[in-house]
Length: 338
Image (cartoon, rainbow, N blue to C red; front, side):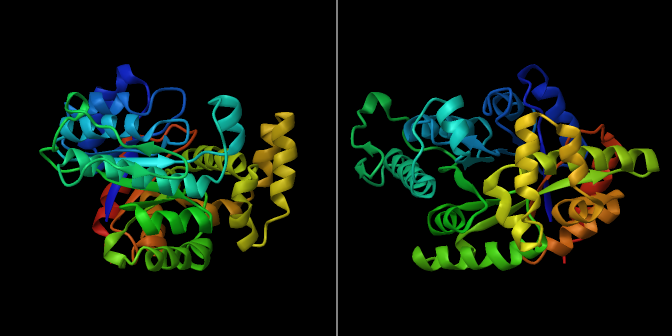
């Protein structure tokens, strides 16, 4: 099983950190759209490493499909065919109040976004004129001046981040890959995600081989009691943040913890981070994330996803994980293919 790890979003550090992570054994690097641009670090990394590169995720709804197509096409060239465009929808408050754009029908919009970008790629490859007319976006003009022509490595893969059934079905219907959201559990993945994947594939007339599945996992790892305690605190803080969002309640619901979500939401509005973290107990932490030595975490990752995916994206949130432990985790996951 291949392992992708997060590349820090600071552009001035991206090249050096990319070299470091690849030296630790990472098969791929992904960026998160946080305090920095999601694409710029990958531009820096593309010139210094041979690893796979991915946005995980670029927030799609505030962007034009044409902008995304141009950026993805250029990164595909810079990385010599190793780029994947990972897209996500974000939640309504961020789209309306942070990005200042329109929110409606997120799954339908994301489905159309993927189809529009594929239509643009198809036109650039010379396979058909650009004529995409959807409910939310239209692209029917492509003069030669603005056409980069066929990509020497072919169009990049388009992946869609999803949690709920509507978005998961949309990803399985039209995308090349599904980014399984990191706030998840083995039971939710089995009982909710996999059936939605099958429904989406059927809608698109596709087979399982047409869709890559990329699970994302929150990892708390260490060896000493002090390291494991620090990792647990970082993981629990992130789980509390995710759990405060109503969109993530279905995961808690499957596990019998639905009542925790409104409590977390109230505390988040008060800014009571410590109290939120305390609501995530050890059972919740090890169900929604993985925690333990690098070998224990690797075994759990493979047990949850090894039958359904050939690569996994790992996060090490909010604690000082050592390069040695990252390398040991990567090696253990890579060696544990079922």
